[in-house]
Image (cartoon, rainbow, N blue to C red; front, side):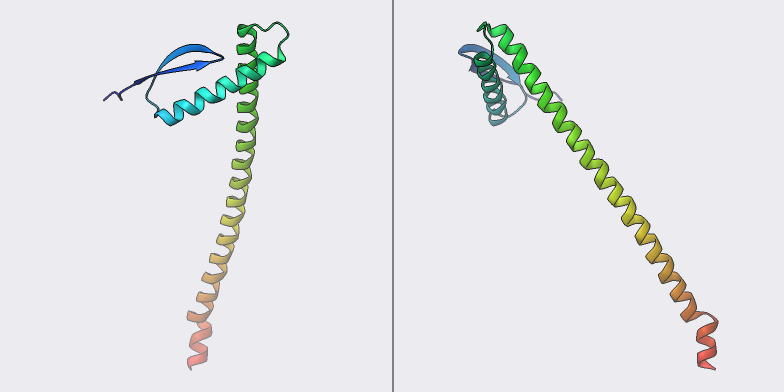
Length: 115
């Protein structure tokens, strides 16, 4: 079943836009605010004052942030995976030691103690 798409009206850099989205209004508002902020920052940085140039610069800035965050997240995931592997190895060592201790208590050592 297809989710209902709402139509949102908003301004970016003073220009009106409409967007159909399944996202809740607060999410769309966050997206719009971020894009508007990035385009306004890019407009200040561009000498031409061209909205098209500012939009491309804003897109590049957002893409850079995305890639950097994704790279950082993947590094963190890899670090956690390595920690999990180390913990799994340590746990297996503890299990082996516990089994060996159990065998020594229930094996020949215990029967000698009882006799």
